Image (cartoon, rainbow, N blue to C red; front, top):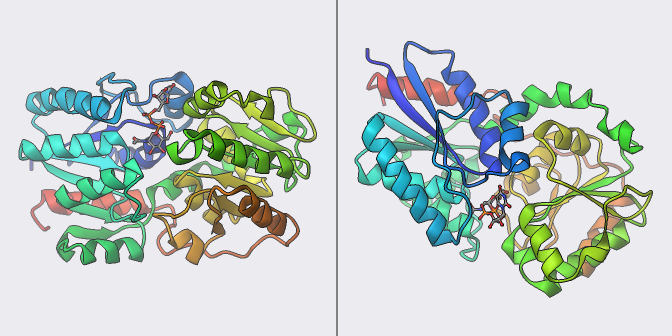
Amino acid sequence: MKPFKVINVVGARPNFMKMAPIIEAMNHHPDAIHPILLHTGQHYDQKMSHSFFVDLGMPRPDINLGVGSGSHAEQTAKIMLEFEKVCQAEQPDLVVVVGDVNSTMACTITAKKLGIRVAHVEAGLRSRDMSMPEEINRLCTDVLCDYLFTTDYIADQNLLAEGIAPEKIFFVGNVMIDTLMKHRKMASKLALRAKLGLEVGNYATLTMHRPGNVDDRDVLKGILEAVAEISQQVPVIFPIHPRTKKMAEQYGLESFFSTALKPEGIWITEPLGYLEFLHLNMGARLVMTDSGGLQEETTVLGVPCLTMRPNTERPITCEKGTNIMVGSDKDNILKHAREVLSSPPPQGQIPDKWDGHAAKRIVEVLLRINSGEC
Ligand code: UD1
């Protein structure tokens, strides 16, 4: 049988740790699958992109579209224009997209209009919040895709309720957790925590980059005031996203940060690599975030997570795991942080099939698809 030619698409930071185990699992079947790794270039900074390829042992992308930043329409359009040329030249049998970033949606639309089948990994997540660009990306992607790989039963229910045919849905587990499990031991051996003088269970980490939190001065200021108070109790390590840094500077809020680590206060660093950040999160007393993936990672690590958003597309992390939705209100963030810091660590459960083998299950399905079984 002719090898199945698959273009695997990545674009932004949270895509890399989802795609790494899929590529690895595909490489176990060189006679059956011919994988091509394509980077759209949505994220391009060394610290937002290249360092993840190194940490995760990912091959260099075979193709880089180099699209860079822009408005949503600009970025999406640039990806579509460039990806169309690649699809026409390569004539793949399948395109695999992951997550919910602009690259995910842009490549899905482009491939489908050329009659190429598309598989979406991490399908069916829904926040029901149309003010999030990611929700629009998720909806457009899922409605078009031929194969939908899901992380939990809630995602299956969401897709079925939207009328997606059950035979297109495959509950395989969580590829992000494959990556976490593979690198956990290596991350635990890093010396970063010791170098920074941090004690296990006695510091917090913070990530924040959603437009809803960082593009409005009052919201951003309120969150930083809450975190500044929390940092009187435990030091807070804040690897700052370029967007957040830009907005904090524009709004004159840099006085909240210190670039030198002190026993108390918010310490900002450049975005950290995958292993370094996992290392810090594994030993944290508390994680504060507006990210999607971190809600899942903390659930598996058993570390309390305060998610500074009004809703989540990952409710399983609240139902089973250690995640609490706290919104962006200063007093609410503080109330929950104090509760967490004065309680014993929570006992969460790990969702079904978050076991390190999701990518293997995905590739098994792809082999069945290629043989015409599904
Ligand atoms: C994107 C994803 C978001 C994901 C996040 C992780 C979309 C709609 N959003 O948001 O879901 O959680 O990535 O980081 O796809 N910038 C740099 N260097 C880079 C990349 C971005 O400086 O390498 C700056 C630029 O000023 C850019 C801004 O960050 O305009 C926003 O980047 P963009 O890719 O549009 O979205 P993110 O906020 O990173």
